[in-house]
Amino acid sequence: MKPIRASEIGSYLYCRRAWWYHLNGHESANRAELAAGTELHRRHGRKILAAGLLRSLAWAVLLIALVLGTIYLTSSMLQGL
Image 1 (cartoon, rainbow, N blue to C red):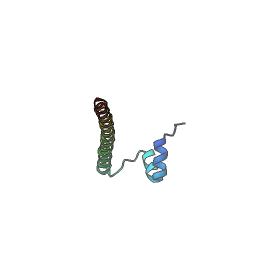
Image 2 (spheres, rainbow, N blue to C red; image 1 turned 135 degrees about the horizontal axis):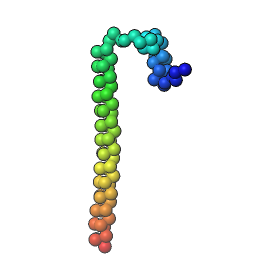
Image 3 (tube, rainbow, N blue to C red; image 1 turned 180 degrees about the horizontal axis):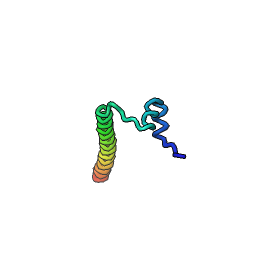
Image 4 (spheres, rainbow, N blue to C red; image 1 turned 45 degrees about the horizontal axis):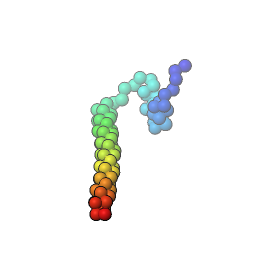
């Protein structure tokens, strides 16, 4: 008995007919559209990853600025004593 993968369950739940066609070896007639959709999702995923990295970098820069500002103000106050 062949094990059922999670992706197969997802395909079945999305469209039972398409799952059946794939199971029986029928090729999709819209290969170009599928390839274009895959490329679109890949590019979108890269943009999401880049946005997350930029957000993390922004938080790190903000934290460094706060620490340096605190050090500067503290040293300025101590010199005034």
